[in-house]
Length: 536
Image 1 (cartoon, rainbow, N blue to C red):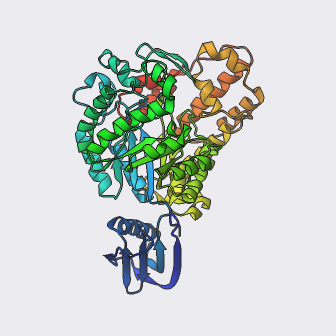
Image 2 (image 1 turned 180 degrees about the horizontal axis):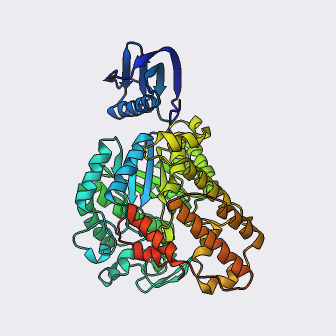
Image 3 (image 1 turned 120 degrees about the vertical axis):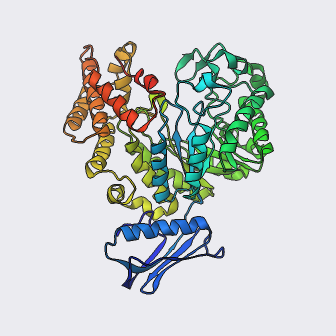
């Protein structure tokens, strides 16, 4: 019998109980530890004693797993169970082109509930249908207020908190590309991005009261659709802060000080609405001693997605500041087509290890869609399973995921899908030179012609040939077969570049298949933008 996440304590007893038995449920706040439950199955019946209604729901989730694996009678047993981390969250990017359909979102909630997650966030830049800002969202098929309210209720019934997530400082290029919002830009005429070079459109709001007042008008319309009393205001990667409007201020006071002063303006708006604030912690970690100035009802989100991310140092610094914090690893599916489990697995393990070591309030697994959100949602299943298991009970991190992924969860993977996901990631790891935040085959796939010469110098024909052979030997259907075929093309393109040959064009039927799978689970808005990333 497979139970996941693995209960903290389980004792099998002799005897069986009828499948038809109705559980007797009692809520007792004295049940220890907090958020725990006790599940007893005996010949006399089923008893659940839980510290909270949410804990009772988790006990019933465990009971459902037991009954689904017991075709005739339930085994007698006693379980004492509780989570290692009180908050176990998942965040999906819905602003990089791909906005899921209503059905897809509800299926996601079902998956998370079955794994005892208790928080969900939808990363939003411009994909909520703000009534006064149609020019910003009109091509994105955004979520409406009615849809958010329905999703919030669906989550609430499953004891998942749907936390509103609206970036409010950096990553605002979807707004600042429109003339109506240019007056709010730090650098309205463009800026020098430290990674991507010159950008024609600004991405950061200037740190002024006007900017804080503007985002507060967004909060005013967004927040009534959620029952959560927490708001994630974002605030990560204000790339050009100090290049434009705030140049003199940053030169005088330092970037972290200017950033923090504006963050507090936004937080004051949230506080005045009676909510607690979450924010991305990358900038404050430059001078973590300043975090002591943050309001008490603030949670820093310490994000990092590589195997070597300094979670120990960052968690220790935030613990010393007295500010509540989450650890934030990633699925590492973005910029990959086939996934990067070789990065995600150690990244998630390190995050959870340091969360428990330094007293984090929780974990938020992030699932980004950088540069077009081309990856299949199926690639995220295994990182989600790992996070669910290890954040509830660290012993779960060592469990074999195959049976869980293919038998235990709603809408399980087929065995061939599970094996394909493992193999696609293994093939992606077969390059000697490690690539940060992406896979080599993804980089090759989307490389424009102007980068061919420099890219060819970085490639190994031997590694590409091994990858190609592995991909061609892989048999899988559906969306993962599309991923395989795109990666086959990428490997062939890379080999052509190594031979100083122009690569063949991407077959149109692959793009048609991409569109087909996209529309099966996602809204049409953003599809054309995502397709535009492919070389034609």
